[in-house]
Length: 165
Image (cartoon, rainbow, N blue to C red; front, side):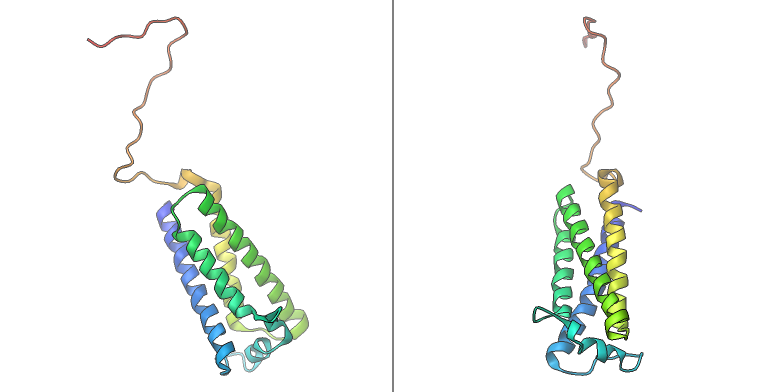
């Protein structure tokens, strides 16, 4: 997969995650019932004591996290921006893992919206780590990226170089 395709895939997944987090944030602040095919489990999760961290809805924290990831992906392609994406997705994955644990062992209910966000964050983390580790090796030459002309091995010390003309 080319570096460009990988970056586009990461951006697309982040936009989907933004959609999920935006919807959950909207549901929280509007007070409407969350759409859920699993009965009332999403509502149970969304209204539990674990739906806020220090008074801030976890949906809003997720929304801010996805915005940060998107910004790191839209930044110029450099090692620092790739590393920022890795850091943000690893933190997001850790937070998602914590919240999924709370769903399973504290709330005893699963929210399909939360699970979808956790899956998205897991994919983002894995892909961003892969993107970082392959670094510039995954970059393909495009227009304006002329490779340096190949040069033969350096002559031994003291040897004269051929002159043109």
